[in-house]
Length: 564
Image 1 (cartoon, rainbow, N blue to C red):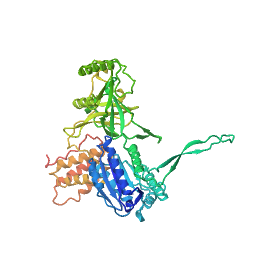
Image 2: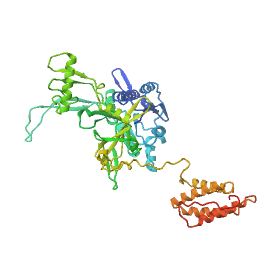
Image 3: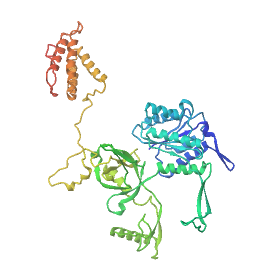
Image 4: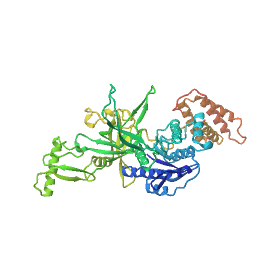
């Protein structure tokens, strides 16, 4: 999921916020600090695959860094930014729409983070006039892709002018139809403990009670408040999606995984117009395996990268009481297979240390060297060229498969299908898929998906979307007609192609119109034209006027001395 960082570089961003000790902080410095914190969050939370672009804007805009995974290039560019004139948000919105269409198309989700002090601009390009034009003309803002716009507002919560500006920005989000929100720094609160007297229902005074009173302190815009605000931004929009991948009942065939980018909620609308939002389950269960050639290319919602979740945890090992990795202390193994495997591991662990001590020993477990179902599943799917059918929720399926973006590196991908059991027509109901052992004696497996007959590039179909396409086909037939008898075969080939297309579409009026065109062309033929030209045009017009709607029937040339 690509991210665009839009930084306001108008003159108002160069103002000083307040003096903290001997340091004067500007809005621009707070914005750069917030952007660096956002990049640190991406690096620290397995989000290194996130493409990020940096745009600065005032009355104009400039793409400082195009979409890249090199976050250091963005950090270096932040230190070379200058300030310009007034704020104009409309221009940067058009720029964001153009960049998204150029790089990602209209189907990819994108997130936009706008760092601004909520300036409204001046004159006809002010944000209030932009909203007025959009509302009056009933035209949506230029967002063709399903983006999510978040405004990181840098301002004092006790400033009435700033609060009025945030209302205008919120109205912009409302009319844009995009999912996003405003993030405003919270005011720092001073906590004091004071004594007050409480009275019971009879009016008699009780002993003094100590209660906590929270008193807000102005101005509320500091490095700490901006840092807390960016934590809320990252927690809301860039939170990891942790899940459990399960394959079978054996406990070793289960491991925690990360899905990147995080799957978005799926909203569907029924016949009555009622919207239903569904979320992917935190437990992904493998239902079975199927060949990739049988799956084909079904319609999907999104694709995601599936990675094992790495953690370093010390695991206590005892002779009789062995803890299961990832469980709370005191929760012991309960299966026969688990107990047997634990005893074997404990036996070899004692042999390596040459210790007769029966007490507990702490063994540091490195997750990168431990066995993982993700590694096993990835290797098996890659070698066998198969995919795993997984259950993502109630009647919600997906596929896990190996995808190679280069010759040396391959990744495990998750394709999320639309909710429902019958979303791949050639496979039928996914709940009824089975193995070869489920076949009835004497029943054979038929190949699927159903493939059409192999066609050649020369067998192109006729498509008349625009009027110019139909005119060009008719003009092509007339050009061949004027070059008769040399172009006799080409003339009837194009004529039969148009006739079959018209009959398949039910466009019988075209045949009558084409016959009239041929009859009209006969008197206008030049004097040096071959007499065979008039004969073939008259013959074709008569065949087109016949009430013959058989698509397999072809009009053959009229026999003359030139084509016999």
